[in-house]
Amino acid sequence: MVIGMDDVISLGVGEPDFVTPWHIREACIYSLEKGHTSYTSNSGLIELREAISDSFHNDYGVGYNPEDQILVTTGVSEAADLALRALVNPGDEVILHEPCYVSYKPSIILSGGTPVPVSTTRDNEFRVTGEQIEAAITDRTKAIILSYPNNPTGAVMQKQDLEEVADVVVEHDLLVISDEVYDKLTYNGKHTCFSSLNGMEDRTILLNGLSKSHAMTGLRVGYAMGPPGLISAMLLIHQYTMLCAPITAQMGAIEALRNGEAEMQAMVREYNRRRRLFVTGLNRLGLDCFEPRGAFYAFPSVESTGMTSSQFAEELLHQQKVAVVPGEVFGQSGDGFLRCSYASSLDELKTALEKIEEFLS
Amino acid sequence: MNEILEIIEQDPKKDPSEIALLTGYSEKEVQTRIKELEDSGIIRKYKAVIDWDRVGEEYVYAIIELKITLGDRSGYDTIAHRIASFNEVRSIRLISGDHDLSLTVRGKSMKDVAFFVAEKIASLDQVQNTVTHFVLKTYKEDGVPLFEQEKSKRLAISP
Image (cartoon, rainbow over the protein chains, first blue to last red):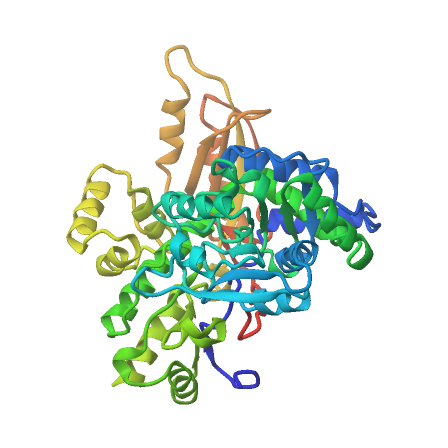
């Protein structure tokens, strides 16, 4: 609907408004100039896998061997798909918490599995509990998908929240696919990497990428890390389907991981300012919004307006040309909420708030 | 503290209430801190980056490198302060390499700048030689690009 409308302020975008930092773009250009246009190893350039391994060791103290525990993919979406196809047999159940990223459910179904959604709530700040997961387990349960910091809610899980989940995982002998692509975008606190928890390294496929942290969405570089057996199963599918991630993007990713820390931190500080301005603004307008401590989304409730979230989103677009995404797109428990991305300039966010205010009056 | 400075450096016109919103400090705290930063000289001055070419104002800029012979009892600071006092001098830095001081000078014409260098700078006792580079075009000033940049072309809705 929004496509083709002019002058829309879109808060519907799930990607950074920053352009990829220049030093990374230049590394891509330079690699083209030097004629690096071939396939890479199916697993990805070894230099990139080493850089990934180093960064996780430095950030979270987890050790992944670049030789056989890291697989570079064409974005995290491919990695998630590979993980599910490698793990899931027909009839297996995969537990996922909703609201969540839109691709998990279809990917589970495509891999022959059955998605078992667990609803997270505003009252618990959209965190999933060990208890909830335990209640959803059957003898067909194979794995759990965790995705924190969360798209669309901006929720994060503290270490003790994750430990609760880890206990259930051990008790029921499960595997975890942990999509942590927003890990760097964590505000006022430190992200806990799921596989850094005691005993979780052997049970976790950790997914991450450079799209959000280094504003590289269109370059498509993600990666999966995990026990060698699981990674080699994923590699088998990857080599017959995608073959390898684009080499130009991989070269950019090496530069990003080696020299991109300062620019990344600057982007995170800027997101944090926008987050404060925008979330305060929404609450002032009576759109109740818990404090999102991760990613770049606010997830306000529209309850006070008496409208459904789709009505709200549709009318807001028509009347004020502000685009937001109704929460039910991300699962039933997202109904009554809106996903608003604050990955827009401060001026745009201020204008959007003014327009929402006008819409509500 | 650095957070406030980073915001002000980008946009000195932001008012304290907005800075408070962006940083999570109260408005009063922001006002107090800015005052402290101003008083202590950490914030030296608020200024605008102006693309004078667009105004049609024909300023001429030159980068001038100086080789200095230090006198018996005076260091670089003395001569640098002296040169810095000229209004024509926009910036002055002590540098490594073949030369010792690097100046940016602004004048109304090339003749103006050449005259200034010859009369006021080259004539100083400590100045051994000068190299003058006239600026032909400025592309970026103080971190601000002076050319049009393409806007990012994101889709209006994406997952």
